[in-house]
Length: 411
Image 1 (tube, helix red, strand yellow):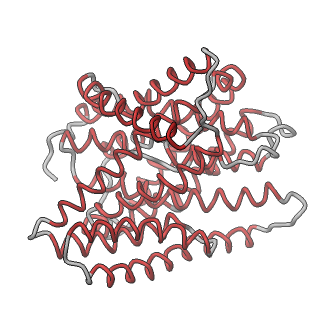
Image 2 (tube, rainbow, N blue to C red):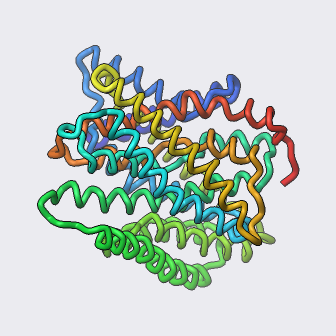
């Protein structure tokens, strides 16, 4: 496609998103789910009439990881309530690291034995699938939760968990992918654990350095438009520089976003500048999410459902089992620790239902090399799980919140 054709297509997609947003709000349909449906219908019509959408798996993967993901992570980190994050930090990290790793293993075991084909779908394929399915993306339910006025702690638990476990999932997936691509190389559990620690905490260190660097840079500018530009540069710089050093770009962006968000909101709150920067990032993420989910619909093929419908069902069941064990079992365990505020059972029910899958899951699935014999099965499972969480789980969240008496609660 020519540059002019791509720009026209993007403009039409954004116009479509603007039109669909009020429809989704009126009929209480998750916006992301509606965009996916429209993208799927549109692509099938274009292909049916002999056309070509011009969208390819590798292009979509690069768009998510290099363009959309830094925006989504930075915006969430920039706007997150740091006070609430620190107050619930231990619980969030518990869910985002050990519980996420446990969920990966449980999902992998369920998928491996559910598919029951060791030759065509070996253990490493199951572990890769478990890792990419462990990344949660509750954006579709957080919008509903905030509209209903649910407790701030419940929102921060879901939001914070998603922020940190995205990084954990990506690092874990990269370790398993290396093992899958080097079957003759002996990789011990110690080697894999060391690689995880280096990538994860390496991203934290890069984020700290760049966050403080851009913090000092932001002090040179007092205009809120300049502040917004600094944050945009910081988001992409922190991600790309961390990836250059082969550490976690997501963790780097997350730490950078938290540092800049805390300071800019403090320094510019009275002058109204922080409000402009918040609106700037709201705009960025609206555009990114609209294009991302429309493009996701375009990349879905009917063959995924006809060829791998059973694998999709197995993947969905595995994710639900792993999520239930992690949230209900892990929630009960962490609540027993001293100086940790208990997680009510109503919160755990919402956290279980709100553990949607989205952009990171798709990006990781699309990054699988086609040289791996099971890549198509893993991708199909990923798409099936994402669609299930958006079309089945997300619409249920409002009724569950009302049933549990969590709507209209004071933060």
